[in-house]
Length: 364
Ligand code: SAH
Image (tube, rainbow, N blue to C red; front, side, top):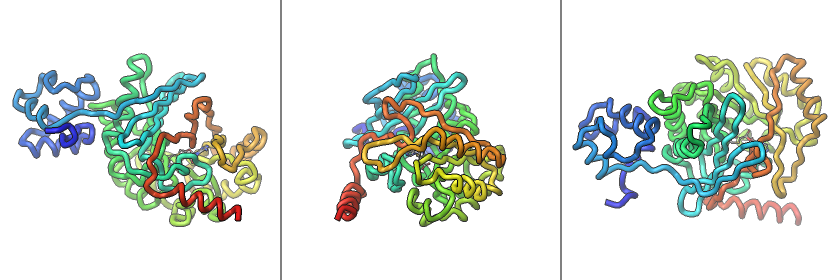
């Protein structure tokens, strides 16, 4: 039997694994035993899994595998931020980023190869889209990163803010997040796992039913006209619907607020009026605002607002009672900052052709 037809056990969360074991006539507790071996004991050789019966070990050896994606390149920035380029096969590569801080270590995880959305200020968007990542490829980023960091540095937080739109890869992302939070793997707290979305409203409602993670919404504009342009998915799910979904999500359980990400683009969304509109928009939503410096990339057509403009914007929000932070830029000397992750995408969406046509049309 070749490797490729074997079942990769990294593709299952605990529930999936339990179903798998029941399917082969085993008890469900095998799922927790296996998770512990893989994620806590760092054992992938079935022969070493001593609390499994000999016959089960033989079955797993014959039919299953435990394969994580491979790190191809590691780059460490002057501030300690580490970027890994991870091989995903067939010429595709994604990037994940580790951001060390004094009291925590955050891993920024990708959910898709490329991105199908066309946010105008994001370099991943320019690359087009290839495919969704599997559960193994998503949890695998945490698995290989923690292994690489060793005992010295623990990953305490995960943000689904790498390449791709996580809520357009719903089932795999939810399973991978469930895995991260499982007591038999990394046991990350649900407050420390954050899904970031450009606002896929139906998926936000679905997530509300099945998962308890924190949510960040990439807002970037406080009126539909501008947001339609910057985050085109807004044309499908406009602000009124988006705010409704945010209110619903924030209502439940331990979640107290939604984090709104707002990239500061000079002369585009950074005026006093924009700040006032934002205050009005978020009036009835439990919100924290995270202002992000625009990270430039070639031919983006945008510039980051000046430090003065950003602080003025922040002060206006702050005075209205909105908790507002300015995100520290980390790892920009290795292109590991927000919106700079590009990997290598074999575009299937023909995005590059469309963009080329658009720019020739503009010139003509
Ligand atoms: N698709 C998801 C997650 C990936 S992007 C989302 O839209 O939320 C993570 C964050 O980085 C988003 O808020 C995104 O809007 C922001 N971002 C994208 N390009 C950027 C850039 N060039 N500079 C700064 N932030 C950027």
